[in-house]
Each structure stands twice: as structure tokens, then as C-alpha cells.
Length: 496
Image (cartoon, rainbow, N blue to C red; front, side):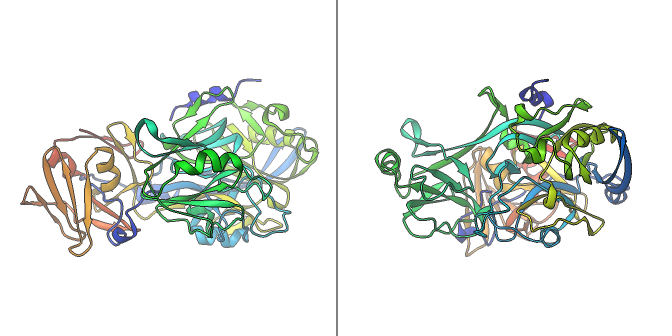
């Protein structure tokens, strides 16, 4: 991900079918790699919390600040939602505990005053590992695959093509994990596993998609499959006439996400967005105050003129992620605080009673209400490895390093190589074919079979969180692939 996306801000989890889950939908390849010395200590220092008094705008502001070294491969960042799924809220401390966060901050605005506890939907965009958690349009802070952060204005746009080839019917949902009310009969909405409960809104058909194919079409409540989504289609005359007749059980369904800039151009490769949260307004750009309420679509006096509890997120001059809170400031003052802290890019998050910060195992800024969502930092026991196959970023899976062996995802790699594979649940084997060679692998067995002959592996394939991982070296040695290692990004690139 390159920072040319700043041009959009002008100056002024797919898995195996249920029968296969026992082995996992993502096998992992591995290449032997020595982890850097002193790595554990480096990780311990990568998340820092401090309190500071910041002089800005002729005042002194108390600030609680967390900074994060995004290049530490033990760390990952992502938005999280309340335990009941999108549309619900949760006590902030419980959300942090459930997510396993080592640091976190409240995220985008949400419908906090909605009476229905299942309709307290977020207002801004959220993305995790290339997938849209919640659709949105406006100022967005993102972390890219190159482990840098930046600010842009974009709209998340999804499209589903139902069917095959030139006859595939395109469907463009209004949003992801949103709901536009019973009166919006023409709405089409995509619901993912982050929704957290069955889709049972009235007045629409539910198209259930799993493993890239339509599995059922129903007017009753539909569970969201772990390896797919549910498309809610309102029963307007338009949808009855044009959309629904093009949907058949068994039809292929291909989902694509595009990030659209204000001028209609593509703002970014969605697959290379590790994490994103949309809120606003923008505070800082290029190390200078950059507040423009009209540009960013804000006119509420609570934001434009009033003073209140504030939360912010951004990047400092050394490239570290910065997340912080201050108990009372206007947006204009908050922008000056961010500049005084050395931030080169910064954005306002939800504030007031939503302002919250978690660090050092405790809620250090306590919100005045339950929250819908947050942006968190997690620490992993093993370094996380990015995988790129023939230039395609494997966004849905990460590899990892264990005992100086890099384990990478089998499915994420073999799918991108165009290699068909199948799982035998009775024998607990996965078989793949590539370049005229047939490979058979078994979880927890350090020997593969290639064209009927046994081949020793540097480590046994392992199932982790429902996914199968195998040594990356195996791909290079078996298929003659070229593997390039980027130490700074902890990225293995496979070219075949």
C-alpha cells in the first residue's frame, strides 16, 4: 500500500465447507527462517502508554497516549465489534477482554440513542484483513499491508456477481452489516459473520452464500455461514422483477470489494488494507492542522464548535500508530494537540460519552456508556507472516514463525496458484494438484506424499484456529517456486 492514496484527500474469510472444517480451509506452507535475536524484548517495547501535558492553543491539555510499532510482527491491529455483533453495544472493558487486546480505543460513531438494542449500528467504515466489517463513506484511517498508516476519504463498495461468465448478474448492495428500515423495500444488504446473529428482518428474501455458491433462498430467518454471507433483498417491484429471478440455488457467487474515492476512481486495493476505521473530521495532514468540516461532511455544533471529551487516532513522525484521549477540547484545539504530539496524520474518533482508551491491562479512559465498536492492538505469541502469491496478497490468512520455521496458509496459496484441492474427512488428508504433480498432506504428520513418493517436511502441518498450515519451504522445493523474504514487512512472496 502506498501513500499515494493521500491524493483522495485534496489539500485545503473464506473457509472449507462444514464437512471440511475439521482440517481447515487454509493449509499453510513453510520456509525455514531464523527469527531475529532479541525479538521477544522488541515486542514488549512496541506498545507504549504514557500520560502527557500538552501545550496547544494557549492552553494545557492532559493527554493519555498509546503508541504502537506497526512493524513488530508479533502485533496486529483491527476493528472489533460488541459481543452481540454489529448493531449491539457492550461495556468497553468487556470488549477489550473478549478481543484479547493489549491496547484499544473507541472507534467510529454509532446510533447510541437508538431504543432498539439490536439497531445501534455504527455509522462509519470498518475493515479487517481486506474485508468490510461495516460499510461507510467519508474520512477513514487505514493501516496498509506495508504497515504504514494514512488518512483518505473513500466509500466502501461491494459487488456480487451471481452466475458465471458474461451472463453473471451483478448485485451491488446498499451496505454491509447495516439495515435501512422496513420502509426501504428496495434495499439490498450484505450480512457477514460480524453481524453475529441470524438475519431475520421482515419484508425481504435472504440469499445464503457459502463457499462461493448460493446455498439457499428463504423468506425466513437465515444464519450467516462462517465461510460466507447472507444477502438480504427487499421485496420491491424492482428487486422482484430484476434481481431475484437471476438467483438460483447452486449458482456461483463472487464477491468483490472496491474502495472508491470522491472523484469515483479506485482509491485503494481493498485486499491490502489490514485495518481501517472511518470517523472524522480529519485533524492533521502532512504534520499541519487540516480541519475542514464542510469537506468532511460535518455540521453538528457538538463537533464544529463545542468542547468535549475527545478521542483521536493517527501516525507520528516515526511511523508509529498513535491513539489518545483528552477530557475536554474543541476539534480545532484537538488538531493543535495532535500536531504538538508530533503526529503527521490524525483523525477525530467518536467522543463525548464514547471516549475510551485501554492500555497496560486497564481501562485508562472510561466511557460513559457501552460502545458499539473499537480499534484494537493484539499481541501474538508467534510472529505473524504476510504471504503474497504471484503478486496477489493473501489477505484472509496470515502465516507465522515457530521454532525458526515459517508456516504459511495452504489454501490461501494454492487457490491463488489455481491448484484444485480436496479434503478427505475419513482419512484426514488434503490432496492438491499443481503443474502435473499430486501432493497429499496430513495434519500433524511431518511427511508429505508427492506423486506417490514420501517427502520429509521441515515441520508437520498444523491446524490453527480451524486452518491447516504447512512449511513454506515445501512449496519452493516441490514446485520450483521462487520465495523472496522481506524482513521489514515479515513477508514471504511466492512466484511460480
